[in-house]
Length: 120
Image 1: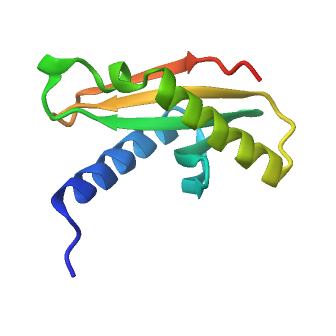
Image 2: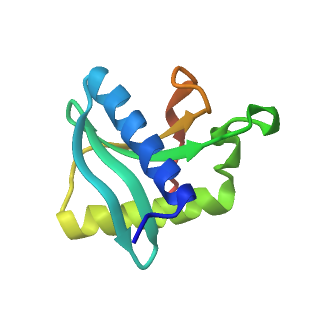
Image 3: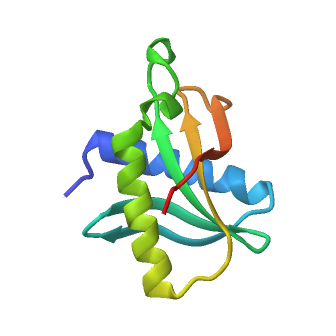
């Protein structure tokens, strides 16, 4: 059974973001970490820091970047999923949340480090 087109596009965007971040020195730990609280697209390491990466695909840039779609509700779900990850993997290092917005063109990638902060 073939993958739905929107899922294939999302997977390709995540792969593109992951490749870019790896060229910038980040190391992939896991992809698509799922728990009851939500999903983390990419969990990476930047030196000693743990990085939770949300990848957003925007096919039409006229409606804003993918980063614009990570509002308070989405942030809360990402924070909850990250807390689950931290607890279940007994992480002790500093963490941050990055957002990678992937546009319709191959070079249309925006990486926002430390895109938002968690108050926990």
